[in-house]
Image 1 (tube, rainbow, N blue to C red):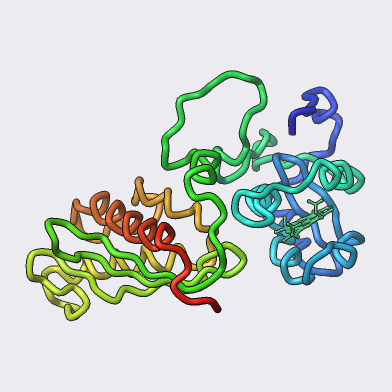
Image 2 (image 1 turned 30 degrees about the vertical axis):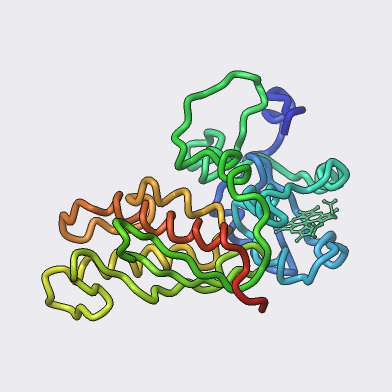
Length: 249
Ligand code: HEM
């Protein structure tokens, strides 16, 4: 947070991700948030949601959850003050160096220095661009020269992808959804499926990682069009978001 005091942090005991991971349940729930570790076991029953919402993050680096109660909506200053009551240490790697959030964008420095950041990693940009999409069922397409290449349907729940399915996936007369293992272009289908799998369970803002698809898909076989494919999937998903909820849950 903004009031981060490096000297005060030095005084905190170091805790590694491994130690953190041992406290992943209601009996002992630790969370790492913005480089600090909190034992929130006593707070879990008081949290104003279903316990599952907050238990899911026990034992984990939880900055993304903390910063996104719902996508783009961080906890209140009141909650941040409350959180400090549960501070027990600072997160370090195996060498004892400070361990930052997995997504550096989430760590948003407060020092006023602007840093060039990849658009694929800029969480604040993503939130601003997406607003706060409603939960529900969505449909969207990517069209090029009048031809639908990607037709995607997805469901949002609590601002996260609950499911993503391709209704249509084609390029230049090849219908990827009909391709089977062994077909030359089958890996392209697999990459699309990996993109969908990786997004399920993630907040909507995760689509921006697809601008750098190596964050998301395996380099299956030297098929070099992964960037292009990621961009088409983002475009189709954003089309769905722009159209708004197609049907309510
Ligand atoms: C890291 C995982 C967490 C998630 C995903 C999460 C999620 C949520 C959600 C969905 C709400 C209710 C919806 C809303 O107010 O908009 C909420 C509210 C709240 N949570 Fe959390 N929470 C987490 C951790 C915590 C922790 C560790 C604390 C404090 C120790 C905390 C304190 C609060 C408070 C005080 C509220 C009331 C609203 C506010 O002040 O922002 N939460 N949280």
